Image 1 (cartoon, one colour):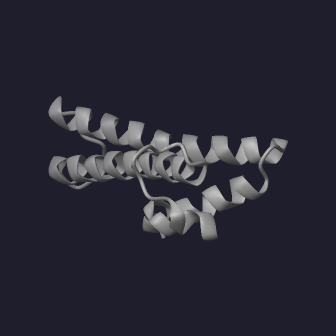
Image 2 (cartoon, helix red, strand yellow; image 1 turned 45 degrees about the vertical axis):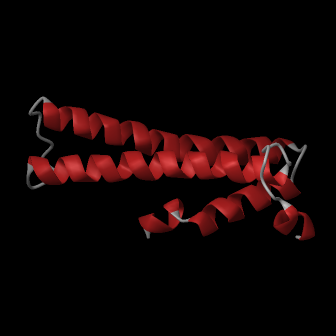
Length: 107
């Protein structure tokens, strides 16, 4: 279930919804939600990794190794979502230089 939020399909769906509602108040709210939730997950991942390094154990996890791996996955997943969101939006608005964007112009 949670892996769906990090998939490229979810990024494309969120960007498409925001682009269709462009200029409205709802589009701005959706954009904020779409950016803050993965950002918060990435920040929590950094916190889990830091807690592992300083030997602070959360009781949710069985070992500190699992805590570090979960933190790393949250950090990488949140950062990948934010990066994918920005790149796809820039491709859609033709802001990227040196890229072939014909595939996005058709749709």
